[in-house]
Image 1: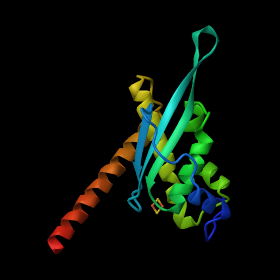
Image 2: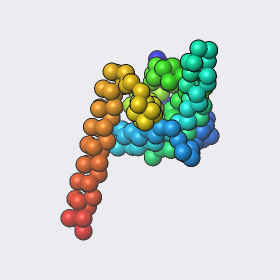
Image 3: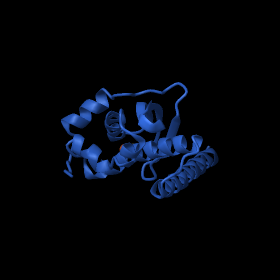
Length: 172
Ligand code: FES
């Protein structure tokens, strides 16, 4: 993985013209994640298509994916890249995507911005988690652990935000 001091051309391109920005009507899974370092938030929506195979088997692919983020340029660029990477992949393939895959496509990120790529990965994991729960499917152990970590992170961010609002009210 390459560490850069500034944003690369690729990052700026995805930031200025993000792919798959927006929401999906009636999504099959919604993932919400927050970044503990900066407090930024992201929502990611997936639509899953079931493709019948031989012998009654079904292949599930992520047919559509969109995101919305309250985050920095790196958060927007990494989210844009993850949506490109995920589209057309199976649930199992999508779960294997790592932050390094995203950063390699962007040809590196400044070290202080590497945490931003985790936001996109976390939101994707959460969307898949919700899809599996809704469809009463088994949740891989690793995904269960990730879900617990993300939930805890969201609670911490909410608490910090409420404390901040309170301190602002006291200051008036
Ligand atoms: S600084 Fe918050 S996601 Fe980048």
